[in-house]
Image (cartoon, rainbow, N blue to C red):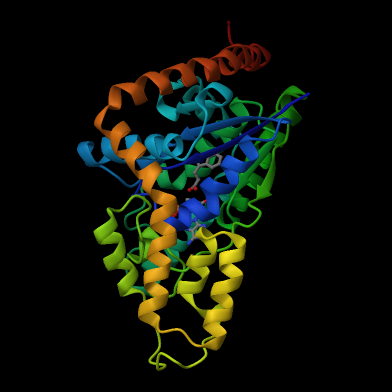
Length: 332
Ligand code: ADP
Ligand code: TRP
């Protein structure tokens, strides 16, 4: 029996290299495994917790869809959809909310860290918290449970959310009998944390990202901005503590990585290292960038592909929701 493997990305910013290395690339590899049915989606309703500008919201949502496709996701072999096109997810969201204790949400990290930072800044603790953000993990549980997901590939920051989905599923099963299978998370292999321009984790929250499909000139400029030390060109440099080397290794062939490591140890100027980095990145990104730009110009193609994916998703979710509601005493 094939296992459903599901993951979503929320449209709250431009996809950057960290998202690619940490989330998209490993998920694309998993999608190739014959034992899995991949269900990958644009978590647009999750994005709404943050983005309230319609044009930006639309653009970012299409951007996520175009990114997956440009990088080679095969929609024929994937359930590839937009969350908001599968209404059963939202019905389930409410049902699950009625099985989720408020205390569980109080402990969810996205909400908690917002409260903590408000308190540090002497603001009212719930400042800027909308109920979408507070109940974010319930909608994520609905995403996961609605498609009978067994495996959720995620970054470390999302483990808690998958555990919450399990807790909610158990609460429901306890009352109505075995209904939901309990999902497991899968930490992305090779999904190491990619540093950003300033050396901290690359993240849109830190404004230190390199967007994945940046135009070559801008890409070069951003690479030139990467912080380096003031060692002279001929001085040996430590590859393992260098952002430039980490990025280089992520995009180069293994043999090129080994050679670059040698060059670092022997002494390479930062300027030269940055040029080499640009070359390997651009070599890899050229083709997907072109495809991405093409798709972004034809959102109707994206709509069509996503719609077909939503139909596949509803093929699972509609009968399952009926079964769930039947158990609860709804007339179905
Ligand atoms: P951001 O930190 O920019 O807000 P998200 O939280 O939306 O990114 O992350 C989307 C996915 O990309 C998650 O699975 C996350 O683990 C992964 N990810 C984000 N930044 C990085 C990074 N710098 N290195 C590796 N993976 C990352
Ligand atoms: N919360 C995830 C993130 O921020 C996105 C997401 C929404 C998701 N629903 C999901 C991930 C279901 C996995 C499964 O990255």
